[in-house]
Image 1 (cartoon, rainbow, N blue to C red):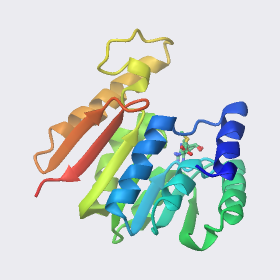
Image 2: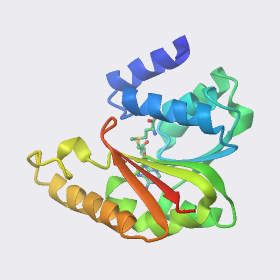
Image 3: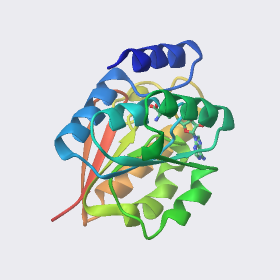
Image 4: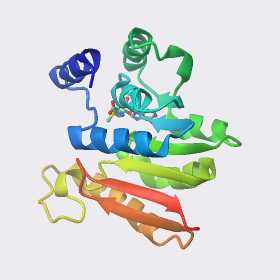
Length: 196
Ligand SMILES: C[S@@+](CC[C@H](N)C(=O)[O-])C[C@H]1O[C@@H](n2cnc3c(N)ncnc32)[C@H](O)[C@@H]1O
């Protein structure tokens, strides 16, 4: 990782902006290196850390959906400093509203890292955007062990999030046209592809 990204990761940790864990970053970067996607969609960009790591590992263009204006402003700075701006399209707003506007486009890598309680509602909006050979990775699906790994639910408000993430995984796994893996990488990743 270059110095700018190392400092950006430190900044994110310092200001409690949640960005991908190191193992997840490595997983995404390896995927970008081996698969060489042309078009990436990221839902939940924050300050552009994971997006920049992916762009640094392949020649793709990326569409990023983000609702927070301050995060967008910081991400714009990041992309500009790294020379990535021409490869980035940022769509501002609630992804539940902006995702349907992408209908008709196709992405060969999708990274979902937005609102955890809405993952399950986004399945039907995301699948039409995934190319036939594409890969869709979602972060935090094991939610600090509170989903599937038997960790105690640490706060009452997490009961609903954990249940909705479990619903998300069940809905993916029960879809006969999808192959779904759940990895213990980082905070838990689901990896979805269309069956051939
Ligand atoms: C975990 S952070 C993303 C981190 C980023 N992927 C990274 O690793 O560098 C989640 C982001 O999703 C954004 N977000 C939350 N709800 C959203 C929504 N409904 N629509 C779009 N973005 C949303 C938050 O503002 C936050 O920046």
